[in-house]
Image 1 (cartoon, rainbow, N blue to C red):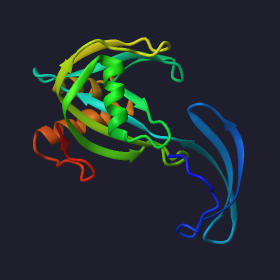
Image 2 (cartoon, rainbow, N blue to C red):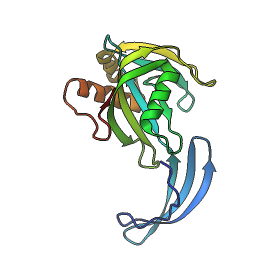
Image 3 (cartoon, rainbow, N blue to C red):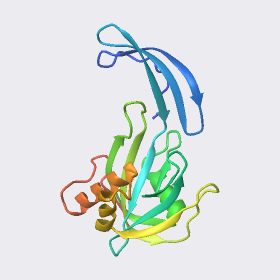
Length: 199
């Protein structure tokens, strides 16, 4: 998430002294921070601030996960991923997940399970990704944005996990979402305390 005034109280012996804007775009903001360390020394940290994102694992009645294959410019590859989307400022993650599921694959879910929320790359970014399992699907027409070119792919969940082992699926949110969904469905994990199931 993108915070307001960065000059907060000392956190675990680290104090932010100065924040210099480097780049502010539609998706991320890049800053160069000067930080005082617990030993009194000063250091620079490159920080990327992000509003956060959601990822959904849609599971149909036949136990197949619905993925999307799309081109990602940064790695310059076609990747197989779970549907996902960026949060707007102050947006509720579940509402964002509902919207993105409809837009990307044309589905509405009758049951939502919160799987996890986690930092994607805390070494340099404050982005938090929220993962959901979406079940009891009602299918309709997808409404992708003008710059999105998505191919919908249906794969049995366990087969999708084998594609992770074979390094065919290499997207981190997808790896986490598939694994956490299987653990939940096998009864080896519980619903995230922040949500639980919603119908």
